[in-house]
Length: 342
Image (cartoon, rainbow, N blue to C red; front, side, top):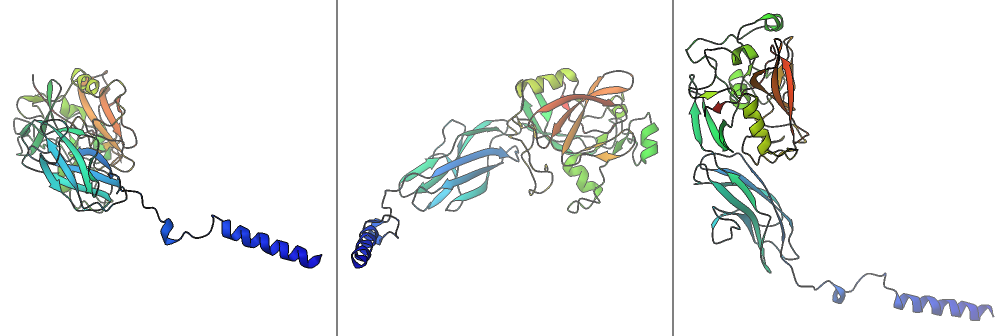
């Protein structure tokens, strides 16, 4: 009886082993399905200029066949293809960036990432961007890109002028106490000592602009280039309206994010920059002279005052796509964007 049971167990085990589907597959059982098209993503465009822009794509999956070519296609018409403008940028999966050149100023372009494998060509979602309208210079000779947004033309960079339009220098170099008690127009440069990869006041100003108190905004000698002005609340509301009532998708924020070179936001950065306004986090100087918020906050003055002690301002945060309405002490140092006089 014992031998019979032993023999039965052995037989069951052998039979089970022969029928098992859990063992290693033979060469004949390898997946022989035909390849499919790659899976491609197109990211929003960044670093806009008058004649160039930086596009970005990502090949998520190769579809079972090596991606032999990838890149960007773009056109003034929707749904660009390989027959339109084309940048080849390597092969395989992963992310890539590519500069589109020889663009026309103040034009809406359409761009898609693409990838080619043995099955054919796949395209990512279409993105739109608008090239810069042109440039404007201030009295110091600083040159700023400009952008058409709705009915208005805005500077696409923060102001960095050091003189009023009549040539008078704007007060600067104030310590905390002097900053707190001055009633004159003044500016500051956010300290760069702790940043490591910005090595001078000039580099800081070039990347992020200067921080001005509201007395500089309100000075009759004027901060903005001739024909331009500091935006009032009506100007701001038109801009915010173009970003939608919720304006929570980062239409007004630059997409530059750590580890990109300066200027950039800290991560995470909820940004698409679909407007081309390209807001950057220059931080602010508080009424008592302290500096806060660099890399995480962007604050901009409005020319509209709230009362004798406060003026209105607009704020962007690194982890949020919305722009917020606020008011602050007139002593606060904030960034400035100029809008062209209508």
